[in-house]
Amino acid sequence: MSHYEEVKVHGYDEFCKAVSERKGKDIFAYFSDCVKAEPVVRGEMSHLPEGSVFFYCQVGERPYWKDPNNEFKKTLKLSGVPTLIRYGTPQKLVEEECFKADLVRMMFTED
Image 1 (cartoon, rainbow, N blue to C red):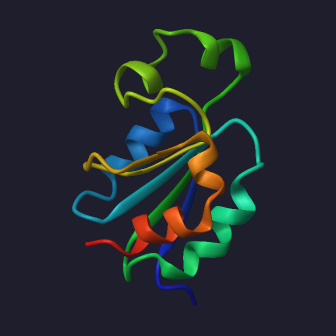
Image 2 (image 1 turned 135 degrees about the vertical axis):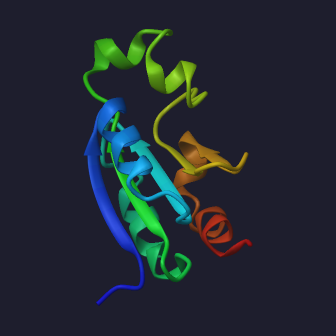
């Protein structure tokens, strides 16, 4: 039994709904349109804080993602994918940073 919860969501509305159902939890969210960085992030998930929630969020189809006015870019201030965030904090790893195990582990283990 893992010490964190993993949630897979597709699109912005599902993401918001799932987050609102887990108010007060320590939430990490990984936004992706592909699976390239995933092995690195997955490899560090044992370092996730006790009781935290890990969201795997597909950002949707390419044309939607390319739109500068999509909700991920406007509301969550994402600039590229993949992006890993600690929800509600300024902590963020963008694109190639998600492929660096030490950076991912640092985000999972920092208070």
